[in-house]
Every structure is written in C-alpha cells, then in structure tokens.
Length: 225
Length: 246
Image (cartoon, rainbow over all chains, first blue to last red; front, side, top):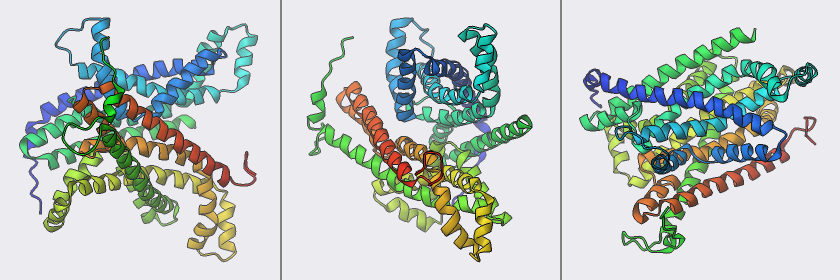
C-alpha cells in the first residue's frame, strides 16, 4: 500500500497560505469587476439601441463558447503587450497575476451578465411603467426601481457563481501563476509528495466550497420566506 | 506591430521530423477533443441518470448516496479532479493494479483518466438536472402508475423518465457544450487535445496568433454544431401539450 507522508504539509503551510491569498485576490477582483461589467453588459443587451444590444450579445456569445483555458492563454499572450503600450508597470509586478485578473473579470462578466439579465427580466413590467409615469428617465428607473429588485432576487445565483469562480481560478495553473493549487503541486513535485499535496488541496477546496454553498442555501431559504 | 502573419506555416512539415504537418497536429488535437468529450458524455449521462434517480428514491440511504456523489464532484475544482484521477489514484490502488496502469501506453493512461474524470464530473451536474426533471413532474403521474400496478422500476422506466428527460433537454444542452470546453483542462495532465496543440503549435512555430486563432475558432465551431444538434433534439422531443410543443 501507499505510504502516506503528511509531514511536509505543516512546514509548507505559510507558502500554501500565500497561494491561497492569490486565489482569493483573483476571485474577489473577478467577482467585483465581473458583476459591474456584467450589469453594464446586461443593460446594453436589453437597451433599445440595436448596435449596443448586438455588441453585448456578441461579447457574451464569444466568451461563453471558448474554454476558460484558452481565454487565460489569450490574455496571458495579449496583456503584457497591451500594458507595455498603455502604461509602464513597475517591473516587480507579476504579469501573470495581472493577466489572470483581467481574463477572469472579462470572462466571468459574460456569465454574470446572463444571470443579471434574467434577474432584470423577472421584474414585473408594471414597475417600469410606474417609474415612467412618475416621470423617471430610463436610467433613473433602472437605477432606482428595477436593479435593486433584480439584484435582491439574484443574490443566491450571484453567490453560487462566485463559488464556481473560486474553483475555476485553479486553472491559472496553465499560465504558471502560483495560486493555491499551483503552489501545492509545486511543493508536491519538489518533495516527492504530489499525492499528499493534491489530496490536501482537494480537501481544502471541498471544505471551503461545501461550507460556502451551505451558507448560500441557508441564506436563500431565509430570504425566500 | 511588427508581427509577421504566416498562415502557410500550418501546411509546413513539423520540425521534429515526424511525417506530418502542423495542420496534422491540429487535426490530432481536434480528434482527441471530440473523442474525449463524446466518450465522457456517455459516462456522464449514465452516471448522472443513475445517481439522479437514486436521489429521488424514497430510500434515505440511496438518496443520500446520490447527494454525496454530487457534493464531492461539484465542490472540488475540475483541474484538481484530473490530478487525482491521473496522479493520485494509481498510487492508492493495490500496487499490482497501479503498476499495470502505469505500464499502459501513456496515451491510454491520459485518455482513460481524462474520460473517467470528465465523465463523472459532468455526471454530478447531470444528476441534479435529472433529479429536477423527475421532481418537476406532477406527483399524480407516479401515483397513477403505481395505482395501475406498475412496480417502482416500471414506473420510472415507462412513465417518469421518458417525461423527465424531455423536460431537461435545454439544461442538458449547456452541459453538452460545457463538456467540450472542460475537456481543455485535460491538457494539464498531458493529453494533447486542442488547447494543448495550440500551445505546442505556438511553441514550435512561434506563430502564436495563428495557432490560437485557429484553435479558438474551432471551439466556436464545435459549439455551434452542438447547439444546432441539441436544438434539433429539443424540437423533436418536446412534450405534446407543453408551451411550444406539438
């Protein structure tokens, strides 16, 4: 039978924690930017101005038809050149980190925009008419009447998508960024403990995601009452 | 930008001396992606249906088993699951079995782990859809079947499942699309499927843009084909009496 050797994990906990910090930073940045940009995309898609609606539709369709791995590779390729021409970043910044954040934000926005669009469309039409009757402009009725209600209905879905996003960040493995999972496998390969490290990483993701999804479900139950 | 475009590079012979072109490599990758995804889809449908049915059964233990399957496979990132199937599991099984697996040709090792991993991962998601489909049916259907003297297996086979599957075709479509996209993760354990070929092409030819563009376009094309196919399935399988049904 395989001889487990878990001793390496305690000594590498600080390094693993640094990796987890990267994972959490990418997740947080992508959730925030993704929701903001996703809301804008959803509003564009529902707007009566045809070219804007087409743009949003194309954007969402393209991002949803490409594997995340390819999106990450694309942005890893494009971002350094883009940043070089846009602004000169300090040389000590990890370009993989920047490109991962940009890729995840733009990619997840496509998914968030679909959730948000469904949320907006679930608001009764009478609300919009009422807002118009009160003399609100389109922007005002969206901002003050429709979006607050839509977001309230969408919170569980947005949180669930956040958990999916947290899991997906492990894919930065393909661009060599030292997030939690990459750190774990690097240590495992270095010390000949790949089996233990992969199992440990899997267990960590499992516990975090199970805990988070249980919270979401409890929250959803209390909310829908 | 001073990038030199050269699409002709795809038709030139590979620099490793193999009797193929870069286009040949690309086609190999395409074949691997499609075979992997279709094989995994079969496993996913079987596992998903099986556990989905378990989750709706009155027996607490059996439905709990289904719930555990879903919890485990949905809460661990796909890439970690690929590593577990390919690197970890052969070490944990009895040594003789592990040695047998490691003695197989590398391609078969990559492929079998990838198919099982992707199949069971997607199966956990299909499981939830099958369960939702069955629970969405009016309870009267089940009771009526039982009252007519059907056994529980017969009720599922002749009444519940034929209806449930037809309800869940739209969500199944997005899982079918996902399985092709998720197959790209198999490149991390060394399988040379499409996305891995994109990187190999760009490493060998230094024509990154051409290789990435052709591979990305290929994924978009697969997506379109799957969508057309599933739309046809949806149209032909729609339940009479539903909105949009015949």
